[in-house]
Image (tube, rainbow, N blue to C red; front, side, top):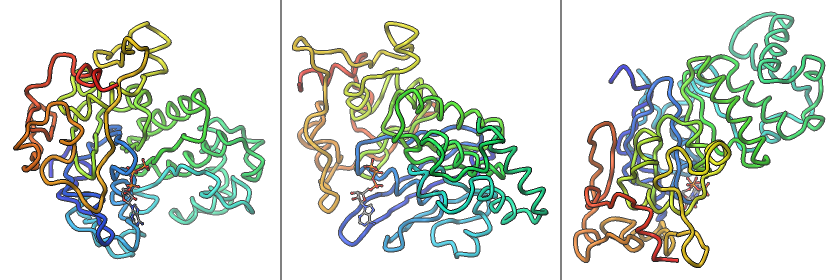
Length: 347
Ligand SMILES: Nc1ncnc2c1ncn2[C@@H]1O[C@H](COP(=O)(O)OP(=O)(O)OP(=O)(O)O)[C@@H](O)[C@H]1O
């Protein structure tokens, strides 16, 4: 495996009976980087994240490979997953309340997590727990509180501290801040990415928020209907998307946050949505396919302004990699200079 790659995903399929949720997905997670995974609801982002943790739902049928160094995570026995959990792999969940026990003090929960991996004394574990909480901005005198005594933002800080406790190789953050207001979201993402980079931890961030992706991620994986639409460096993908689906996603999502605050036009804003003459944002027409009946050919073809009448509807576009970017589209080289405009007509 390429030494720059931490996890290599190859031909991953995840299904539930007739539901084909992830369909032949291949990508790499590069060491020390932040990879964002984006796409519409149902694209298969969370299932992919769970496969990276070696924890797909029990009822799922999973084939293909998720390889992390010497470990194969698809079908890995419980003993392998237990050995990796905490030290190598950790999760920042969406819902901090469900991740924390309501009946134990926050510092005690982190101390227990320290002792579950490192057999240190109770006193040492407690000192490390308090230090970890202080690093995420929770003052020492608040660490003896119970989770319900914390604000939502503080609870999320506590689970970030918990995930990074052992400087794991990989942290998966699945919509880690959606319950928070936009400013708190941005601060938590700043904290998570800053602490991850400081610890040398690789981060996979599942999110719907393209502004957070622009501000925090190195690379972005765009998924559509269980497949890769496009993958590459965030700046390049956001400036000049190669897959029409990426262009539509960018066109229909207002980029907010730092770019919007510091400049009238966002820094990477060639695809920044522009309202139509009627003052509406462009949008992608139609809806994603039913996961029990994917169309033959390109799954995006029924919604794609560039789809041709034959090949796009019959032949699945195999992902092609050129210059550090991967795209799955028969017409990737035909995208106009301002691909967001492909979707202006559809409002
Ligand atoms: N346990 C399950 N049983 C049956 N179908 C499932 C199960 N988990 C997920 N799915 C289906 O798999 C598809 C992908 O789900 P997934 O949660 O990965 O989507 P997602 O891209 O994360 O969506 P969202 O952004 O809404 O969280 C969806 O159609 C979903 O209904």
